[in-house]
Length: 212
Image 1 (cartoon, rainbow, N blue to C red):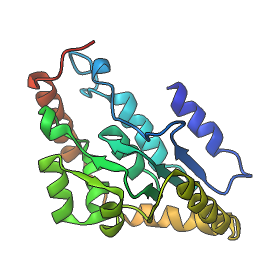
Image 2 (cartoon, rainbow, N blue to C red; image 1 turned 180 degrees about the vertical axis):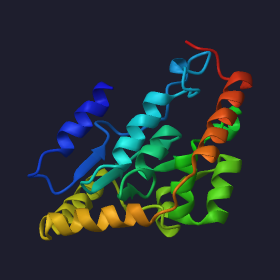
Image 3 (cartoon, helix red, strand yellow; image 1 turned 45 degrees about the vertical axis):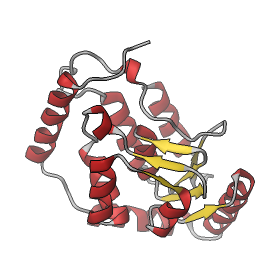
């Protein structure tokens, strides 16, 4: 909740042209902390509701968002990047969705975003095999806008992108984003409920690494 409140507060700043999501260190995000997964779902049936809510808030921002992925994006980190409008990465960064190896199920929203980004066949491949791809392949597949040589080059390309965003009318950029979101597929409540029930079922029987 605190992180989500901070996100919304920053996004409310009308002087910003975009919101950039990046790591402080050499790895974008290693994924959800397995030690934080509860033994039982919450009252609403969700296992990682706070994460789901934050990703939904990020995806729903009116302001354009940019993910700068260095090092790697695994699981929830992958989903955070997918929730951003524009993505840049380094060529050697590793992208992976490991839930299949853990006996878990990725979020329905995340699956849909992935499929829209790279197409059905490649989405099925990543979701069912937990394969790791590098930033170069992520760029070739259209998962990211571009792949930089290293972290320095990534920062340079990000600044170039921000310069482009500063040069346009914010209302037009935000309006285009809003219309694209509205034109996207809408998930019906029954399908969402089925997905959450299946996620909870798999969480209950998954053989996760011992908590530390």
